[in-house]
Image (cartoon, rainbow, N blue to C red):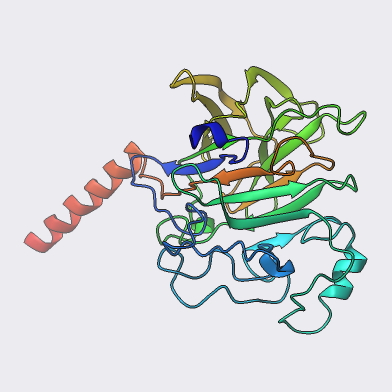
Length: 329
């Protein structure tokens, strides 16, 4: 029964597994309100958007501490980076709403629109909690940044991981195809992988018909795969981000076939990434199709620290042997 509701539960779980380590689920975990992932849908409140409270920064899996607690807009891990987001379609109205210090008014300010990201939303992949993206107003793309944290990488600061292969994967189920909702527009969702300096490595996305795409250079045309994402079940993606060789690889999981397919191997990044520190999120406007007001849901993120490369392991062993030799002398 739950599987048939994926049009009402969109599944996009990002799993970041690096090397052979066990992934740590934290800030971008399963968005489970009850298990302490640090997200709450807070239905009926403007500040239920992740940019208005300490989303992913409280609870047992996200550093502990109380929450949800309203914070100064965009001062947490999540921030609106464009004109649209946080329940507004322009930065002027949003700026007026957030004047002064929080808590901001919980009541509808009068010009609130359906453009937001909320966690703890029903319709999760492995439970009843997910991250929901909505932008059905037709007023421009909704853009956010999420800052990866040490909890995402099992206690290691993301900016300190500068070499090796970082494996990033996620599962997703978009809203139904709606290419005709906005004439002349084709893109729907884009995720951008960036480092702490803002360098863009590559992008993943899908269009309004849910055709899966990717590209390195954000200013060039998308490279289309032959895969249309399933709107009823959770498909998945996995990326190997090689920080040493400045390349990325892309594999796709088809839920129906229950199998992985390689899409590209060793593609050059657009810009060299010093680390993986930021995930950029963009949902285009006028996303209307489906019985959840066009919401696209994401779930079950996990991250891990890279395993040292064989040469590094050999060097560590050599240093250890020399140290033992000195102690014996």
